[in-house]
Length: 67
Image (cartoon, rainbow, N blue to C red):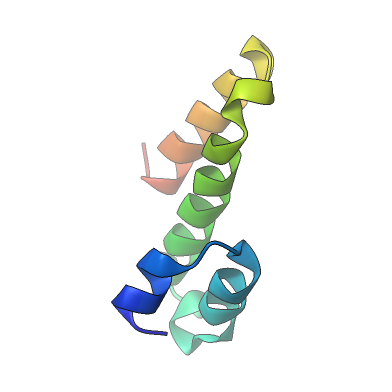
């Protein structure tokens, strides 16, 4: 998947499949990308979350960044 395809993609399924199919996801950097992808998906529905959910999302982002 090219960067242009990634940016134009409206369906997260092929994006996730692309990330999961990469060998680098066995490394710390690859796992970070998967975690941040999950957080980005959560951000898309953040308006539906209560404060507890938003706090967990922020915590997940901090964890993905190693903080």
